[in-house]
Amino acid sequence: MSFIVVCFFWFLGLAVTSYTLIPVLIILRFALPFTRELERHGVLIDQHPIVKRYLTSVMVLLISFITITFIMSLIPGHDFRGFIGGSAFSLLIGIWKIGRNKENTDEYIQKNKPYLKQEFFSTTSTEQTTDLFIQGIKKAAHENQDKSINVSTTASQTTEYLLQGLREASLESQEKSMMHFVKGINSEEKET
Image: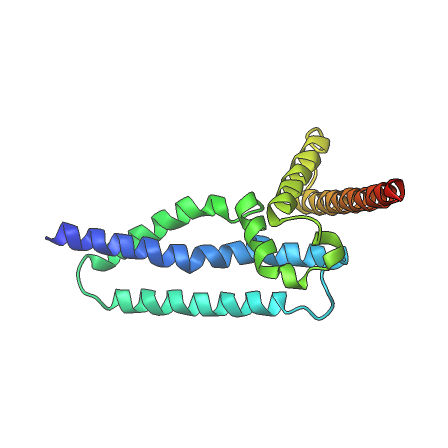
């Protein structure tokens, strides 16, 4: 019976860490630095609440994790060890999800799209934007494979490639719209 109880608390530790500490690490490792880069490149609107919202989330999630962990430590027996084991396992698995990747970029863009200047994002879907971001990562990695360069330089280059791709996608979309408009005018002239 105690094995079942320890397993239950192991899964509880896994769940609590997955929904509290992993998001905190994603915010600290990816969302806040990415927000600062977008600010430097002028992609975000002025007076956006993104950083404030993320810092509030970090505080709430950390307080939740500490409170739950404290409550779990009050339970006598081996149950707390199961909770700690599940938390540690969740951190081991989740550590690979905290950096710049497609999922984090998708979520960032979806949650913060109202605060992004529309000239960069109005003509591209979230999926297209993420694909451009991934292309930027690959391009920056390819250009720097022979150089010893720090991560922040590569991250900055990646953001620049993302913005370049967004601008190109926006221009292509505008050109296509203009072509349709011109074709419409030409077809009206032929009919008259």
